[in-house]
Image (cartoon, rainbow, N blue to C red; front, side):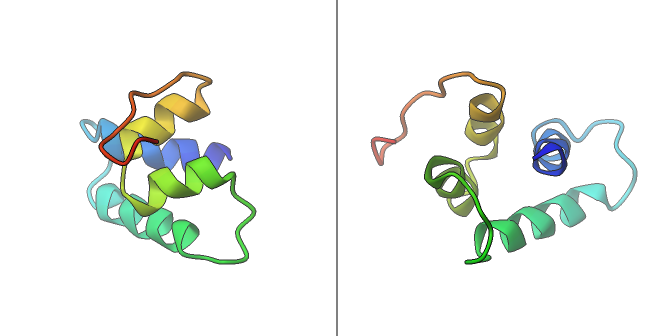
Length: 72
């Protein structure tokens, strides 16, 4: 789970990250989101599949993200 959090932090605040880390983070999270064998909480999977990265990060840090237009 730490790996997911690290990639989310790169996407949410890419300043100061090494060159090329943003596209890599996006690719890794897309692969995780669409991997049917990944054991993800359904809510986290929803956030990742919809590229709601800030919401995913808030949720992983035990926060409650605002509901989107989908109602989740």
